[in-house]
Length: 563
Image 1 (cartoon, one colour):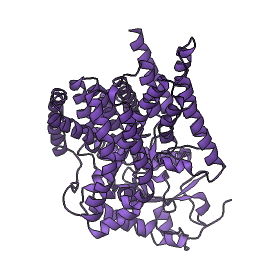
Image 2 (cartoon, helix red, strand yellow):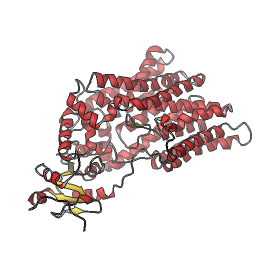
Image 3 (cartoon, rainbow, N blue to C red):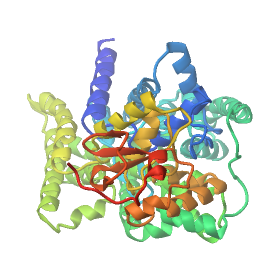
Image 4 (spheres, rainbow, N blue to C red):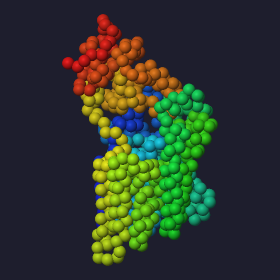
């Protein structure tokens, strides 16, 4: 009982540290800029009726919206509390899942906890734009944590609970849960010993599929069905090349794939070293999960870039590379701990290198490019963390062995604080206060149907933050362009609006050419302030102009100087 309580406390502490310190969390800095307007409009259809993104929800094949709306209406909470609360819960469950997986490999409670703590330092796969620990409360983040839980429960021979967790993961984000179910199916077909476990999970999957299909049919607010079949038009392919480069593996795999192949090699090598301590379900997952991840890259290339199947940008199969990285972290950590147990410290040190490379740079080979002083410092920190783990866990059997091994948990804690100081960051740090002030003014002083445009914002994230905070429509912004993967009409419309208003350098003369657009307010950076007319709102960063004042101005628009 005491050990279980300590385990729960430890998971809560490490989840909190991971949430607040590293890898951290954000809100309205990535995909929540898309999901929140969709949720707001589903909750209150009167808002965002003229917004390009909110009026085309792409959440038909997920329970993300239904769960969020149900919690909001039941507990009377705002969406931030609803989504962030789920994010914390699922991170903790994911931590438990990796702990259970490592424990099934014969590790002690302390060692299994250490494996999960190391893996939950995260890792950013920049090419396919996916993270080991997602920093935003989005469907993929919830599903990945649930898959971790499913893995742990399944290898602990708790198939009903594993099936329920994996079914929930499928309902949150089917592509992320797909590899788990594929491996369970293969083990059912080819392994008689695992077959009884696998069979027990399928009822949960069947229920999940039926429920998701029914919810998709009842999805409110759908004005355009997602295109699941057919081929990409050349024009939409060109738009995706411009805006969603991470979907097209040929644009990044030439450099990144070597690091992922290196991690895959380490994973298979480590799996062979610990093979005897793995039970049969663990073997299935540690062999096939990394393989599915690495094969997803050529599969994506063939299906999208050769056959041009329209469904591939929605599924984004190359993001399954995250399972190669996760499997490498798991297998190498287990191999390192087993080597340290037998006092083979140098071998343990080598196994811990890929484990600790992942949170620093998932493209691990880039760590070897010592091009400047920060890179050398990061390299030294990497070696020091791996060496510390190998030394602490490899202490010979004597009086101080247990306390020193317990102190090994300090290594992931130190990494949480030292890696950000060394310049490792998964996301940009944005000051939201200036745009939040504009949002508060807009919510209090403009109609709910008003349309705003930030014509000089370029690729900045501020417009999407504004839309989510005040529930006012945007004519176009960079972040909205991520939706070109889902709807062709949206892609064409977004591209037309982007070229017309945002592409290229901002000038006052170009702004004058935009005044015929159905835009009610223009928000400019303060350095682009106009001579006239007078703005309706301003702060230290932004000035806001009423489109009617701009149209009625007696002189041509010219950039002014600050008072």
